[in-house]
Length: 84
Image (tube, rainbow, N blue to C red; front, side):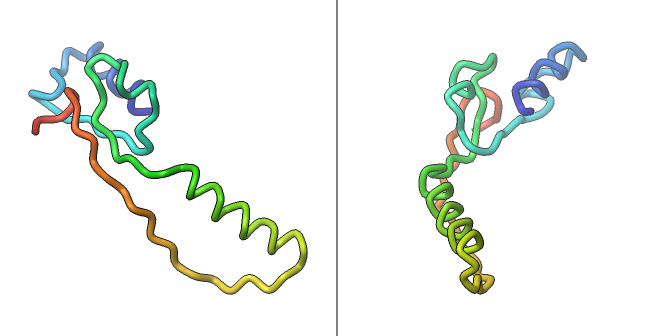
């Protein structure tokens, strides 16, 4: 979605990052190669998927799933689409 936003902003003659900054979530490989390179919040999707798999296995096997909160470590990867 953020890469689509970059395209739409360029088409509207809005300067990135001078007029608006764009930051995505998940830091995909495509973010590095977007024009301009897309700043992004990085999260370890492998760890996120592993935790999701564990919960899904509990649901499938009819185990009691107690709601709980998980906070994943993130980092901000600054690139050309935002002012540093």
